[in-house]
Image 1 (cartoon, rainbow, N blue to C red):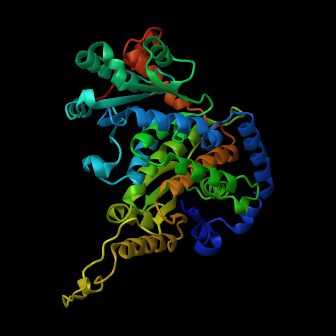
Image 2: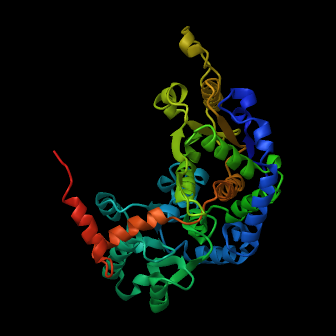
Image 3: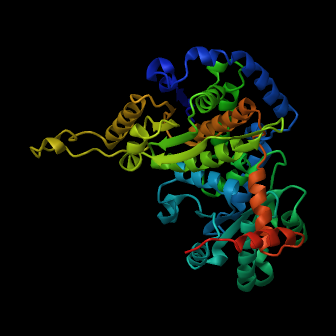
Length: 465
């Protein structure tokens, strides 16, 4: 495995290059001392096991257990299906779309080198109904992922699948299940113990949106024939790079600081991740949850109401040049842009060399699609930055397990550091919990009746024409 380092290009975040809407290097340097303080806090939280995602790259036992489980089961099944939502699904989707063939599930078995992978990340009734009539239940291994064991959407999926498996396989239904949940707590853990179902654990100190490098993502990766050791090695090496307290040498801290200053000083309250690669597009989905759920908070640690958090938006190059860039170049200057760029694509296509005598076509002759693609990215970056709109780049030398592992760790550390800058808890999610409680009440879960009455009372006042 060749170790290719990820690169962070912050040229067009600097006021020296884009004008007054950027951040000067002097402003960044003023944060050097406070960076040391926050670095110590995060280091202490890591060493005391308060924050667990830092330790995931070093879990050799988990890698061994997953590889063993995959080896025992890969020939018994045709499909591997994840039942999960949010942090239990988004990382899995992104891993598959970046590291496997675009049409992985359509490939012949010999070419696929792994099971067909499906991630049932929603409970839309038609979506679930149609999916369950597409696969052979008997040939499918279902991975139920919920740390708490009480996520309503996953619980509903689980009950539906168990019913189908019981009908098809009678008392052998547990062979087609593996449950990924908390090691000790929750009803799913009780079910695992009662029925002796295969299971993997999610560390107590790792939240869902930070869990892709735990069993949550690695088990799916294993069944897709993704080299999880290389994935973790990339994360480990990025962690080492980000262990320095020197702000200008730490890409995670530096990018977090830029985003924080652009938000609080320049009113850039929208963060656009513009992926110039279909294979990286779903990492923008993963980033949206990580950034929004971690940093979108009403109160700071002092209990003061602050209502902060950038709104993350995703865009796909070149597709969204034709749908969003008009807004980005001439609309409100309230955004910071991150371009995801690939230097060397795994496959390429050359435009045929022949003359049509039409200038609108002939200039393309003999060029590779990668040249056109990255030229359009550079042109879009220029169009946006020349209007004084801040943008940066995360540059992937290639897409492979190692570079993806680096990207994951880079953004998880960046998010944790941003939480310190905003003085908020980046690891809780009270707004999400409020919605969960409301759902429990509406569906009649014991102990939540008052919440149902409150919601139904408000429903009477709806204005509808």
